[in-house]
Length: 300
Image (tube, rainbow, N blue to C red):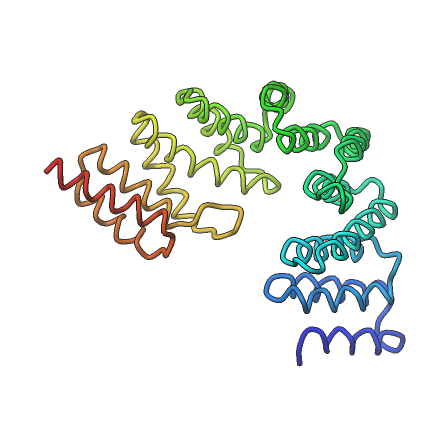
């Protein structure tokens, strides 16, 4: 039985077996699972769920996400999907005005969609102001998103430094500041920011802590400094072994370790990690591997 058929059955049987809340929870679970592997099925599920629970904020938010992704993937129906996405996101915010995730979703829509499909920088800014009313911390995150999307580089960097000072225990701010410093080739300062980010392991910020571990190693490759710390951070990243679209693939961590091994004059270690890196089918990774091997052969 498909997820689609299952959720229809659950909805039909709900008056006799489940409360409305339980039915909505089942709907959310089925929709979320379908989003991982079949967006069309997720769309069918969320449309049916909304018929039964049009005033459920979470289902409306999932509708906004699904229709937004469909808009990105579609050409002929992109405008129609974008309109549905915006309507669902606005409804979710209306139903749960203090929910940060819903407002952030609406901000991303306003910043990412073209004007003809509902994109609007002024409305995005208004939502940022609303987030500040709920939470200073999340207001800063929302404004950073806003400034970054508008490519306001100086204002973004200044606000990041302010955010780090105000919330020194938030990994995300240290991580993002490290990326900016690394881009400016201020490698020592970037290393310090990434190290601070990696040390802060709150569950809500875990993806930033893990990304920071990878960046400690990557920054060591670029700067040719802090090599041993870079090796240690990358080994820790690999040992944790989490895989997620939010994290660099493990193959890239092995490639960075191979690059550090070359800098440390450790050819055996370099070969070991190159073999593991080559398990990836990433063309850019393979290009760097070939370049690294040529450099090693020329130096031999």
